[in-house]
Figure 1 (cartoon, helix red, strand yellow):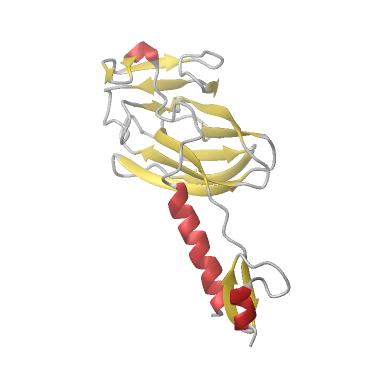
Figure 2 (tube, helix red, strand yellow; figure 1 turned 90 degrees about the vertical axis):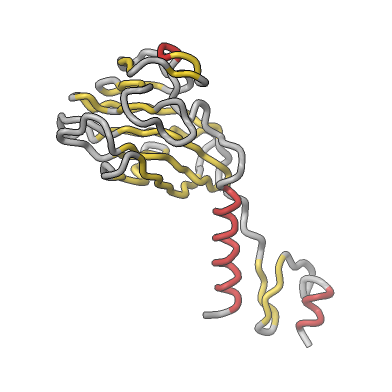
Amino acid sequence: VSPLALSQADGQARSASTASSAPNVLLNGCFTDPALGTSAKYSGNYTGVSAGQTGIPDWTVGGGGVQAVGTFWPKSPGCPGSVWLADDSPGFVSQAVPTTPGDQYLLRWEGGGTGETESPNPLHVLWGGVTVAVQKTPTTSWEPDQVIVTATKASTTLEFSASMSGGGDGPTIGSASLTLVPKVPKVSKVNGFVAHNLTGPYGSAEASMLAY
């Protein structure tokens, strides 16, 4: 493997790692519903939110509606609750996110494995109307997943959806975040050597030395 390829791969890995600690672009990534109490103290088991209702702030509810979940089953990590996307009739939640064309984002979430999942539907994750991930119902209480997505517009719709192919229950989702992936520094190769962020005929004084 060439030094250039190794440097680029290392840069991409470090960028994804840095993205995980960047600010969350999503609003209300815990899917909290005021009907169940404050985010600091959820007191309700769960409550139904029909399509078109605004029970879950910052999210649009569609399909067959969803259930905002509080204490009905284990809470999503770092959140007071979660959202159940299907109770006999599959539903979805979506949010239009401000994005920069060409930028990449790290999308992370927790998929729930507990709840009434007699015939669970997998979780479908859509970015700009295109499916970018499908997560099967976990066998544990919560299972993290992630995918890197690329923006092509100034606003991109993110959607978490239950399978719309039939009835049944599940999935549950929580702890969603969307963070900007830092751009990988430009890498140049001079006489077999790798140098970063170079400019000019050889790039820099460092690159000039490498040329001899």
